Length: 137
Image 1 (cartoon, rainbow, N blue to C red):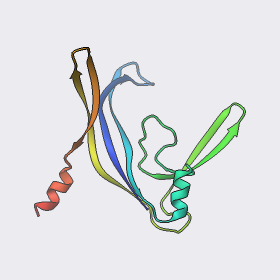
Image 2: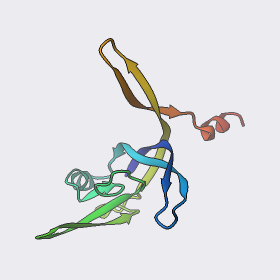
Image 3: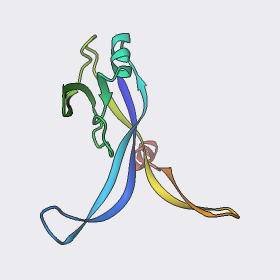
Image 4: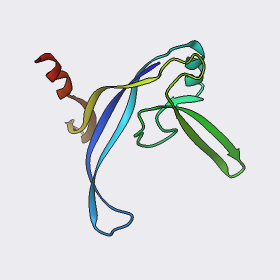
């Protein structure tokens, strides 16, 4: 199984640390799944039934570029979900690879119409230096 993903850089965020009152600068980023080549039919079914998935389960900013098995416990007060990262398919034994296909930066763009002004955020693909160096040898 191969999972192809994009890393999106959202930029710098100056937020207060939970331990210090001084402001710290953090880079916000996220990984987004682009495409999956499944190794077997059972893995595809498990993926679409949400027993297996890419990254963190139900997170705002996904920072895990892994394939995980999800386990949920249901209680009257709510639900608890755990995940376990896997490197091989539990059904056919094929190796699981997560491949970063591209990087992107979030750019702020202003769209001006006669009625109003809108702020639109778009992901722009960043040129990868690793690919450039391969062709120059």
